[in-house]
Length: 458
Image (cartoon, rainbow, N blue to C red; front, side, top):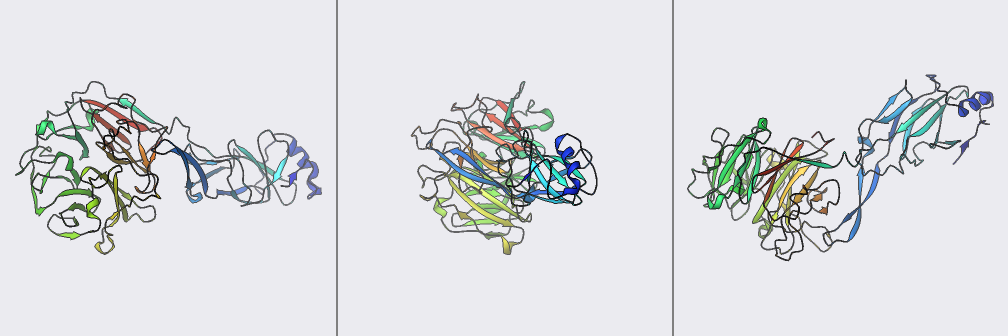
């Protein structure tokens, strides 16, 4: 790497100027020698995680350079990232590309000499701000910049929980929480008589309606099957009937929504409700017309603790990823996951696929009692009670498991994102629901926590 010494032999005419420039803190603002644009290549970070068996392993995460934007302040001579990068980002080997009016040099804090900058090739450590110097082609002008890549602190990226004080929520046993039309609904088994209560967000979780039984169906409403879709709530009864309720009916009264019978409701997205009719997965938009959307590996569909998430694909916002996670009686020690890409155009609406759990995949989601999944901070998270096989391998509600690849692999989260300490290890049923950028956690007994990553705006 070439050094720029106090006298730059390549530009003799400006040597006296450069000697002064490099020896003091004078800032020159000549418009003829400035940085016009600043970008970086993809940043690859290695992250160490703990596998479910307790051993460590590493994987990489990449942030596209196309998604990292820099602001250039020509008055303060500062260049910095517009948005802070995640705390885990490795900024020790970053390759910048610069457009400028001159020859560019750089030096680290504490260094006396500038290094010649090989544009688009030099790997630079941005752990601390780095000084860049642009020397005009005439050798007589120069401009110095301080360049920073900002990262969120570990504290900022942490999930912080606050317990709701003064709530009148009455809740007992296994339950399911759902956000619908400005209210949070909590559906529970209620001793074999499924019931519901709800609260407006305006009450901040303190004021809840009296718990009321879910009525109107021929059979018993399956409280764990309730979903929100196209302005209504839908659920199955014990005879496979599809019923609907809404805000006016308060989730208490349910009316028949379709002549179709289903074994289970699998998921919804922005376009369809998906169910299993005993033969294949079917999809509908209106509960009158149903189309087949998959018929392979049906024996591996979840038959318990079923949850789902849907979200836009990264490359095409008219398409959505849909992931289902749950437990299957045909798989002993691992949860089962299913995936599809959804499109409003039925011709492009791909069928569901079972995510095969193979020996090569060392990171399946463990099979846990009361297993639940949700999407938050651009990732999928799962958690649950003790090991469903009774082995005692997992303590109840001890960790989150995170997937960044649409449910294929799951990694135990060891820091920053965790359940409240008051619930970890306690075998007391929980449910969770995401409302905007906040998580609401409910515990049997009526306890409520609200959690949020402070810099999250989704």
